[in-house]
Image (cartoon, rainbow, N blue to C red; front, side, top):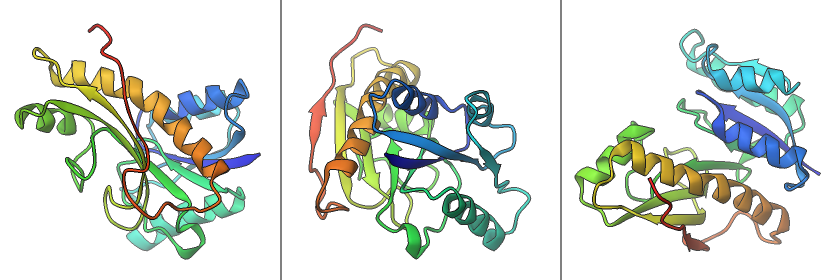
Length: 210
């Protein structure tokens, strides 16, 4: 069974989705540790309630080297196979031990609307301001650049005429709930990992009502 480590900075909805799928045995994995970059992140409380070990690596209190080392140590001690960034807004320098074994999900169709500072509602506002016809989410293998690395899969949604950032965010997140477990399953089933080219898999989501 795949041993997952989760990195988060916020409410933990993505963590909760993955934990639920693991508990239902719909995902052949177990979450071994959750690392939070903010002590008040509600995702840590979700993990504690689920009985999952938590580690706080407070980016505001730790110097850069100590911060990176604290995350790496927590993951190594938990014997993690695959690291999943789940709303992790800090930058972790990925060490050699985890290269090719870190996934991130981003609420846009990379390479558009990614990079430092593009997270949360900022992404969806940028999509709307640019007049895009569609948006979606991207799961990719992380390297040591923001929102960069081989794309595992994308799921797309149309941008509707009266969308707000909030309504678009809701529809994109519905696709994130599907995309992340799909990507993890691809990791467990792949004989060649990480993927070597972008756009390996793409699907269109539906057009659920607002």
